[in-house]
Length: 308
Image 1 (tube, one colour):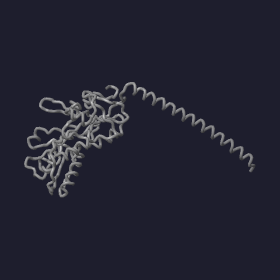
Image 2 (image 1 turned 90 degrees about the vertical axis):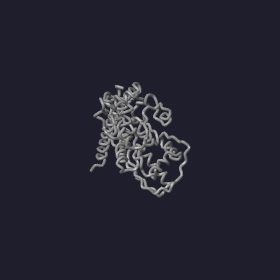
Image 3 (image 1 turned 180 degrees about the vertical axis):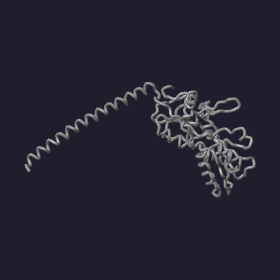
Image 4 (image 1 turned 135 degrees about the horizontal axis):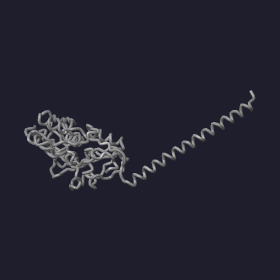
């Protein structure tokens, strides 16, 4: 074989490949430029309007959730029709059965909006202001943040005094300090707690919103009363009230006001106050919503972000 011919052929092939690559690079560069232009236009539109665009994906909690009950009542999604209260939550809403599920869904969906306990808020999502007020413990305490609700622990009047001792700890300065450290609104009264060497087995059932706080409180209580066993079941506020009434749990947790029939059967203590944070995806430029806009969104009256 003539090596010179072989070399020439190789050079021609390499040159051709280079020209093809060059053409491909130019095509890629052109596509990149078009993408950048489109992105810039979309960003400019967002900056001009100050709001998101496209459809709104509503994320709600399940029936029986204390967070849903409080949110729908406060925003007017729950309406009175005759002698009945009717939940008008948008029928196309994606219903999630826990706080974590709402957080994950909103984190992964730029068009989503949901609501969670303020104490469960983290940096994976963005909380919007409501009526111009930041969702914070201070604004709940001074009454300016409107989406606020109580954390209740309910029990039968004749519940074992060893179970009530846990409530005594929760309402002490030590317990209320934990409440505030976890981002909720407490009510320290100068009452100190004295350990009782409690050896009870206490079952607590109810709200998935109250549960994270209760776990912290139970941990601190057991550090002072190491022989006490505490089981916490996160199954929703209504389930917690039922368990307390039926005696399958000594204490029931509710992240809402108790209903009339629950108040008739149970005693209760407000252990903390919590805000409900309205959350959107971190890419969503929306910063503030009114109570009326929240009602419109969560009833399905408004289904597009740019209609707000």
